[in-house]
Length: 212
Ligand code: PGA
Image (tube, rainbow, N blue to C red):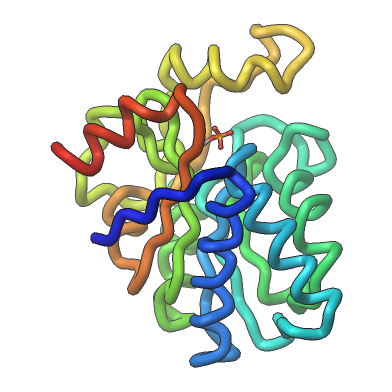
């Protein structure tokens, strides 16, 4: 593990974006793991900037998102489908058929989760996973106590996560209580992980992540 301390969130985003650039330079058809949240947003803005300048091509890239709220239609402004479309996918050139995001509206979650895991394997595994961290230390929607060997599955959100995410919804009661998420085991299989965190609210989670 390498810990890089950046002076600003912008600098942090540039460092993380450079990791993506390095992976794509070495392997233009890399498989990227994508994360949502306010922290990775800066990374996507950097990547979009590089793409617009003609310095970064995503035409052979495949992506897998970490998670999605259960019960929100993909057009809901707070769905992670919508977040990714608005903030990244519609601004770069990843072929639509190469984009994978867990479904929050499937009628058969166990079958969908098994299919998602299988798709990741069929695509050769994730080369680089972009990751945020919750103030309670969660990665994706793997709340504290999740098994280190867990795979893609349904999870109940922790109270802290619902509180943290309530700022994006009109009422706290509107925050979904379930999510579909890659497991910790799924995430740890990525060949490289770039975890981004910024601000005082994440300090404790990061200290515990780095120092144990
Ligand atoms: P945030 O979310 O970047 O919006 O703080 C991070 C997370 O919960 O993974």
